[in-house]
Length: 428
Image 1 (tube, rainbow, N blue to C red):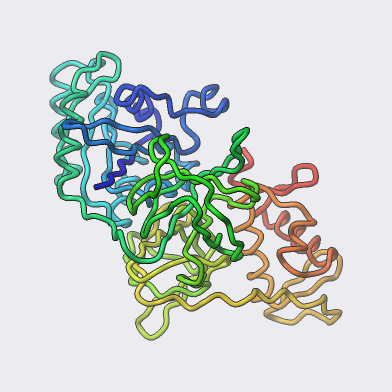
Image 2 (cartoon, rainbow, N blue to C red):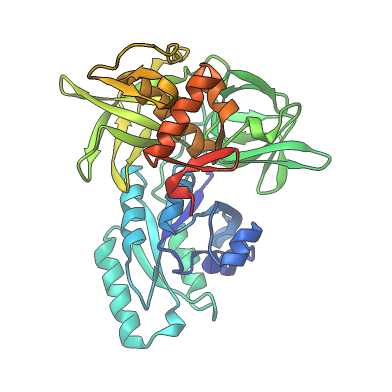
């Protein structure tokens, strides 16, 4: 049975060092990660467990600024490996990552108390005791990546934890959420992700949603080895000719054509950790988008700026400044309709409920909020947005798009850097 293990834990608690000790692979591949000495994106490595069982290991960032990347990795895992520094104990991101795992329904895992060689025996015993109190359902193992003590015990604990993991459905329509896309010389575009359902093999034709573009699978790899077909639950890499990596951003769903309808409205059973505001970021699969939360007649509806390829039983995570809650998709989502662009500028005297924009442009409040959500979602997905891109995705004139962007600059939602804008919280 395929198994995907994902790390979790506070920044600098030793996740990547532990992964390197367990697998022999350095998952910090980006120059920026090596320069800063911390993970900022997802990393992957094969993990050998006792008895010859092989798992895929996802290493996630621990810094609070990169929680979105952490969630993208966590949604595809079966078993968590929570890392806690023996000297520091649980810290803020330890608690938030644990909340995220529970909201995503990931209930089985192991806690590694790292840097065991750096503390005395009394402190190590206290750290192990605290970890057991924090995660009562998990086995706790003290380890040291430096001295390699406890690594065999940790592998054995992971194997025991895997025994209770439910198998993903091998049948049903194919659904793979892309968490990384890149180009390799001689191969072309490669997309990676965890296969949620169905199977993928060379020659398959899939739809890339949202957008509906058809892509053909040239080849499939699991653990860097070519296979005829990959099955549900496996981490896979698929080679896709005649499509660029930029056309398959993180969050893209590769699905059996016609099997799922991208949805802009999703009903969920909500679990609130903290009061959920009316505007949130909704995470699903490996993607995220801005969403409005509507409560009506005892149900909770998410109205999404960008559509999700969701199915009943899927988990959705909701974040504002921090993680505020999560939901389980209740019914077949409402298919997305083509977004309607904001209307042409209205040269009228503004009244209550209207939004004045620079240059004399006036929009209804709902129209402006919709445009704001689209711009924020684009910045979260692509990192930046240009005036030309804003005009295209809003389906409006250059003048109106510029007025919207300037208002968002004034509201301190975005920051202009040259010809691009980015979200303020990312402009650090």
